[in-house]
Length: 360
Image (cartoon, rainbow, N blue to C red):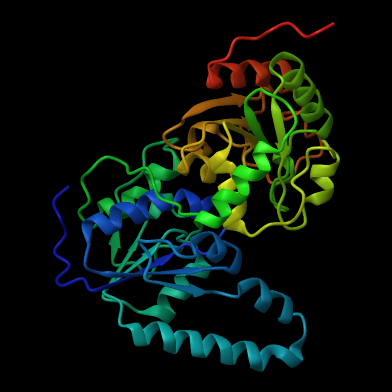
């Protein structure tokens, strides 16, 4: 695609505020953007959790934190409305004061359309109207990406936004940079795990909006027993804020010992030999750090939501209704139909190990 005539691009704003996995899925686009505009300042508007993942990133000149959940909670009390309005007004002045040449909306919904109105910008880039999550999501964009093919992976779909600006190269891998002290902490922790086989991090939790995607705890327990019996695997069950009980239900003895900062959590995933999880942020984070993954998919389409390019395997449900677009389901059978033995075989293929008989 020929490069669009944008004039002198000195300052760019990325709008990808949440969720954690979606922020990680946008990192290859950040790398493409940096290669396209090596001298430009790149700012990223993001909610607090995503900001913790992006701290110190070499391609980001400034993080602007959007306290959306705080505003949402405070909005229940009318007494606090003037304060919220004041904070939004100050954010608007701050964004407009930056005089962005390019603003890129990785959401294209009505909420981020409001952000585009607050930020201004000479060129406002968004998805094709047919690819927007909500009607009107592309209302304030001035430059739109090409229509995404059906079932295009989210990483490649995000990259269409940068291609609309003239990027013509292959999809970058993406970059994450846990500090050296966190990498050393992770190595020390993983060396202390019992066993002599591969180091496997298992992340059983999903977002609170995605409970439908969670694999049952008893399935994780069966998988861990198989991995230990066949390969003397060194297992670490990981968890994040508010997820400790979910992790404890899977395997207490090899639980991540404490709630750790997000980049330290990323360092743990980056030092493992394999990460196994359902459709959650742990998978794209691990993939960007070069760790093979086995992803478990029921309601979500693995072609669209898996780490890209896949280094490892995806295991999909055999349920006839899978994948679907539901956020809630009273049956929740699709994840239960994924058998631990099938996940074990996927893990063995990914690791390139041969199954050995369990010791009697």
